[in-house]
Image 1 (cartoon, helix red, strand yellow):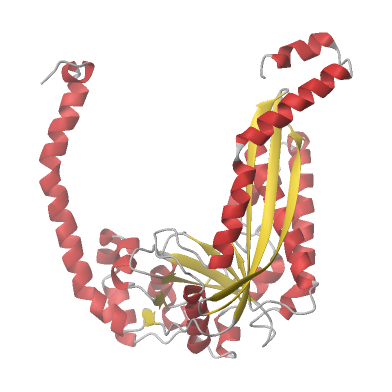
Image 2 (cartoon, rainbow, N blue to C red):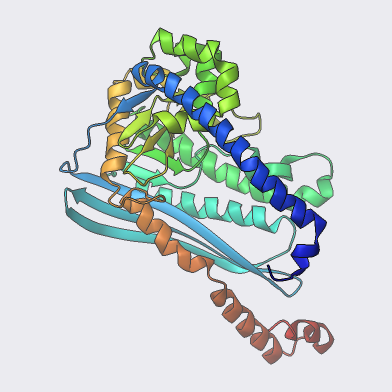
Length: 390
């Protein structure tokens, strides 16, 4: 073996030895977990935790996907940024797919470094809601509206902007998050009652993401049947409650991944009450929301769905049968079989906003800003410090 710095590094040598020794222990542990999953999986499947879906791509569907992206670079002691959002509408029936229209919003400018990444996220939400307003003024609303951002914005969105520890420093942040909050609350106060399940013929709005599985099993262990609008067999509930310690030791995500095959969905679960006190929009929190996961194709990864309304209102709209149709429609609109597959309108929207994430546009913007500043005879002493950036 050739000599290298790592060959003489005792930590590297110990890592190599530990990995060789640890392989068999890891394999044994995984094998025990897989055997445990195989033992409980059939009971959980038969008990209603996953549901087989009937996929019919011949039905005509009109759907809109909305996606957003952002990018920034350091410039002039702060940031230059670009934020974009786009909606892509399609009408699909079998192999007949027509792309109806695209709408877009763009915001380019400069900002300070204060919580810059978080404030860029806020700007993406603002543009998304501007596009939602455009959709809802159409004379005929689509069947499905697909978002790649959460419907309810919790601590991961507003973070420290609402803290009371430093009012002076947080004044700008609070003003920006309050502006976003007002916009979001105003939209839902006007449009929530036009959406399914509150309006029987309204559009279904869903947020799609790759978030974790855990909530379903945790809620079933804690609340039983009341946590879901889907019928769950008492034996499956008792199994979860009796074997909860073992499920935790196996890993909740592993258990659910082990029982969710392609073209199936998990039982839905109530998301109401899981948000913190400062989360918004309040209208959605008060009326509740549902979540579930589905899997499409042999190479796909589970997708989490978040949609409007709690279990009680979904019961008035057909409960599990209606949720089955929703999951089936999402799968029917997914035309690619790969790990990051998504329904086609959202896939197109996400690909289109990738252009916003390219730094070359901001580099070009910075160069022309610097040129314009030179032509305006900006103070040379101040300007000289930034010319080196280009």
